[in-house]
Length: 219
Length: 219
DNA sequence: GTCATCATGTAAGCCGTTACATGATTGC
DNA sequence: GCAATCATGTAACGGCTTACATGATGAC
Image 1 (spheres, rainbow over the protein chains, first blue to last red):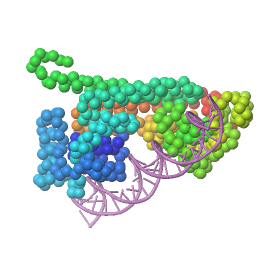
Image 2: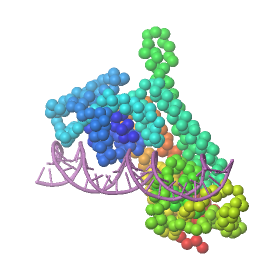
Image 3: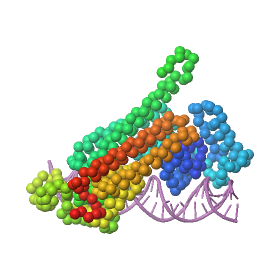
Image 4: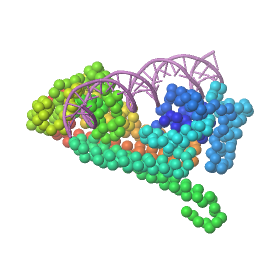
């Protein structure tokens, strides 16, 4: 799970461990808990495996799909480059001396792609997959969502089957717990549907590559 | 976590490990996954700690509020003895020879009470606490729910604060994930309110003590 | 007598945590 | 100079999983 988080973050941007942990905490979900004690060994392991490697300057903030509304990403890149030259005041990059900045490698990208479509071990892992699913091909993304959907649907029917177990209705708290579980499953199902809808929308947008001048057709 | 599950189940009924695992699987939530490899060591540990002990006949299905003719447990014991004679259908006690039936002790009940009001390490632990919260005094139960409520509320505000982080709105999947998290938190909050409502209802109906409570004197 | 099920346990290992150790850089 | 923060790592440990080993019982 931590591999997925690391590779997903590095796919977007070269980072060192300390910063990586901060980004992890900024992600929605309960990923703030990952500690250095697991992060650094994981990085070392990934480096040994050839999935990441230490980089020098560090390609920062590529954001290829959005071609720069302006200055933001470009300026950040320039800014980071400037740091190395000692051109700027130090207030922005404190204590940068010993940092080991990591970047993702091609094998690492393959590994990331595999982790993204793998059946998630738990709900938090699925959350991570969603967080980074933008790096998947649209079809893979939809397929992954559909698998998740099937899994949730099955869990829901299993749940429904267990509802009329012997002595199921005795305790109001147990009953409430059971109902809540069903609600959560239903909510998750609706969410996956939303994710699929987003994917299909993007797929449709990709079909018609910004041909505004043609007929004015709005899909 | 597994201690809470074991003690909570044993509070209701004397059970052996194999049966314990089955009951665990019947509980709502994802507790089916607990394996023998963690269950048996946990039982041994709890026995060493004096929280459970091996019992002979096994007080089964106490349900003390319903008188049950009083003969039930005695009859079950006789029934279990009868099995040997091949007199009954086997569906109830197959392969019973080596079973170690465990019962909860008074220290074990104290431990259970402590685990039930302890701040839950994760959401699954809270689900377990709800599953067995009937064993708490009503006031403790409400207090525990209120603590949970406060925790969820804080998480929700933290979440809201993080919503307008830099670059938060770029990816539709990340955005959807963030929104889903907020929905889940809100749903959980509503659920806790429901649980509190149930508690208050039972508190109001306190004419007749419905649930047995632990840790205190039961006249 | 053989197989499925019931039943208990051990061993190896994964994954993650907390706590500890170390040291550079910067603000004051 | 000193404290706070940045930054990287190691060590000990805990909890849980899978896989393995063992054996009794009952159905057929």
